[in-house]
Image (tube, rainbow, N blue to C red; front, side, top):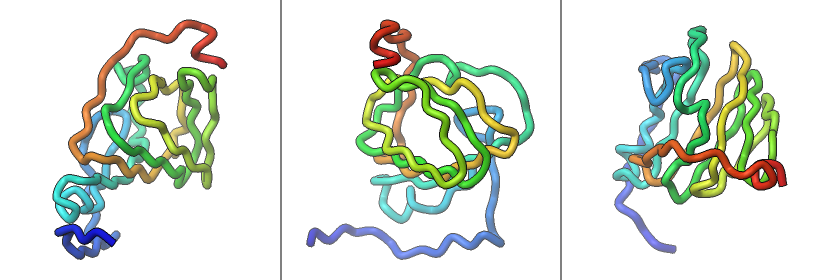
Length: 138
């Protein structure tokens, strides 16, 4: 087993801090993985904050990362993935979002919340052209 120079940490719910992040309609709770894994991973809870507005992440985009895990803690959302069509994810559902897959959010509930784990921690988000119709719904 390869050993990494990661730190032990304990992220207490009672000490949680919610901050703005990538999207204005969500707030984010950093769970401490970015620092503990020296930037190898980020883990955060993303939850709806009650604001209703469109943003560029509702456009087709992709995340430049090696790994992205999404687990729905509450509510629901609909996403469209290039080559996979529209998926409604609901409480208890899990998505392994393949690296660089173009996707877009269509809608989400007011109580939508997810646990997201991504590698590397400082991944980028890029707006991309919409896929061909057949590619979006294969």
